[in-house]
Length: 307
Length: 292
Image (cartoon, rainbow over all chains, first blue to last red; front, side):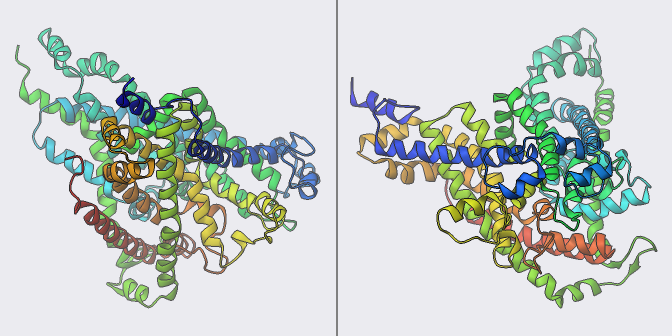
């Protein structure tokens, strides 16, 4: 076995089984990172399942203390105000169930809209010929450079003037119809769909629209799913815009609801266990998608970063 | 059969219509309108009043604004260097020792959570009395810290929360970048007798330049716009310790109902952001492609 091969194996993946001090240090460092990444999530869960009275006395306990489901019941709105106060709640009833529903509505709408409209535009930019195609696309891409804070106040004013405050339409409008990122991203994929597939269909007399829906879209299905995942996370995790536009319980999303809950501090101090129960609920979709999607999720996000 | 050019163009315009419409209405026009609004005095209840540059002269003499500039820049300095170093370190570790998808999934988990959640986690764990972080450091003899409750530590604490949230994602970007470096380069260096450390500096770092540039530019842009974490924790306080420009803009526009002044603040912030991004871009441009 030559020097080359031995060296080659050592620099690639796991390498040989020899244990060097460097390796031990590296594995230790990685373990620390894993712990730091996961522990806060566990801590939220642990607190959410703990009883409010026990929290103050045994705050170092790693496991839930006074295991209880009442915190969840309280923040999901299943419990009356008096009962909530007895359990250490803050005295206001809260309906995170409604907020979760609102987040689902908003996120699904935005994902559906962006995937649908952006893929059409991406196809046009990739495959159709029309005047000013490159110029329009260029302007689109420039939109990626515009920071969200710049458009916040004008968009709010617009939605306000349209009378769409406190409606789902108002919340989803800016993100629903267009996304520079989505168009850019999908166009890359559409460009690599083989020309022959479309040409054959064209010769058979199929319309462009037909070709798009029955031939091209299925070809880029993977990219559409990837985009959907990335957009879902964006929409679900978004805070400032939905917070400003959706202020009624019927339109408030979970991120906004959490902030409102946290800032309404009653006399005794924040309702920590309730807050953590609400937080745990907000985390569920992210964790579920990560576990179910696994490899695809990780690679989607890596890819979206490299845009 | 020839597909008419005309009908193709019509189809195309139909396909791009909603996206272009949405882009114009919610991105392009607002970007310009923001500046226009900054030249007015407007509380949304009555029509806007044009007041020329008055908002900007007020801004110039506004100590809270300048404090906000300082705090924002300081925040970025707290967050980005440490975050990037951790990300490079983690990315190299993963590329060298453990490429498993499970590890990558765990590392990216904080990034997938809403920033509001990150803030609330921090709020709870860093609580001065019953937070677990204080419990842990007290156990090893370090005195209890106020963290988010202290004028001196709040900003760094917020930065810490965001480092937790974003380091893993950036580590994956570095990880992906390292994957693109041909292993033959490492082999050649190894043959020349280079140690791990030297290989890192002479091969990995130069070839990671484009990824590093991308990570730095995008994370700085993101860092300048921090908001949700502060909304979930300190609300600009204690006193003015975390009153970054985005928060100040929010307070002015949506709590004080001064849309014009808020627009002026966001315009100023954008100018600052563009200037810093340009500087970063230039700094990275001056290097040649290292792969030659």
